[in-house]
Image 1: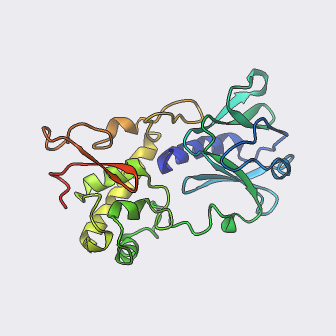
Image 2: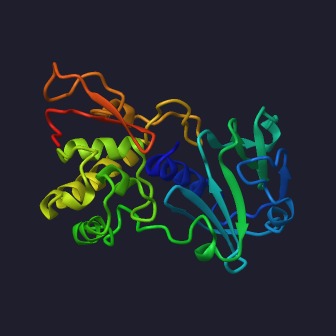
Amino acid sequence: MPELPEVETVKTYVYERVLHKKIKNIKVLDKKLRWPIDTKKIGNTKSKTIKLVTRRGKYILLQFDEPMLTIVIHLGMTGIIYFRKISEYKKRKHDHLVLYFDEYVLVYNDVRKFGSIHVTNEPSNMFLLKGLGPEPMSEGFNTDYLFDKANRRTCSVKELIMNQKVVVGIGNIYAAEALFLSKIHPSSSANKISKKKYEILVKNIKQVLSKAISMGGSTIKDFVNAEGKPGYFTQELLVYKKKYCPIHKKNLISNIKISGRSSFFCDKCQKL
């Protein structure tokens, strides 16, 4: 599933292509997604001009000149956004939505249909966005904040930082990388970790995400950006789906399940 760096990469490209552009026409080719596309609501965005393109966690928001009218896009597991000149666009298998602009189209394609597209007049109260934690790159996500959240929970530290109500956008890949750099075992109880360790973890989360964004995210299986290019941070991964520890080079990377998710770590660097 695309995580924050991948969604940020897509958002940036969408921003460059559709900001201040008017939607001329809309075609819903297949409304079947995790939640069906509401054809009437999406139709209300026709002839509206996009005034803002933002990201909230793993969601892309297209906000219009009509106050609060917003399209919310979640890429799910395999969702992609791509652009074509109108004259060159030919429907592809798994295309779900086409937004027509003056010279080109924005297309949402989703093989596994776990993504979703919503239209809302109250984005702050929309069920997918309401209650989300702070952005990890923001000042609000800091040592004091995370340490306070940890003290109230008995879950593992990995579950803590992947909880979207605690902090948004951190998925399996970047949780594994940040915990490795911080020398914290992913199974460690969140409320048993020192404040100093959380200071290191917060720093590494920001560092890992920042570098991943600069490299267009990570492509493990399906992810490509809006230009059809993969993310290159995959080349920088230290433990996620790796065989050996980059520090203790003969030590095999361990893989355990935490909340049903594969959790990669080095048992020499990250001790319980």
